Length: 99
Image 1: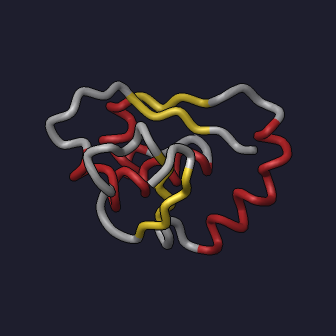
Image 2: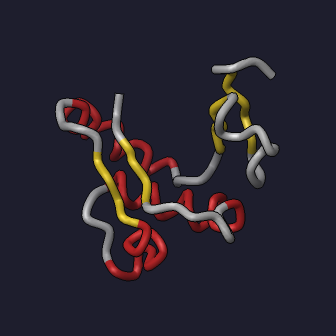
């Protein structure tokens, strides 16, 4: 796999080279209605700087109330894909943005 190649995944994290050599795309993490809602607000969000969600907020999940649709998706991605990948790894949070 070459640097910058997009890899379509539907399961856990790819391999030991991830994330340095490629981007992983995970299908079906967020429901279509949420994706539609994000698409509607994407133009406004794209005008903002990047957003940051602290690790504690992510680990608390949606029960503590995500503030934006982006944070909802971050929490879903963490819960459904990244939680097992990040186990035992030091990390501080997640950055997200809309293009």
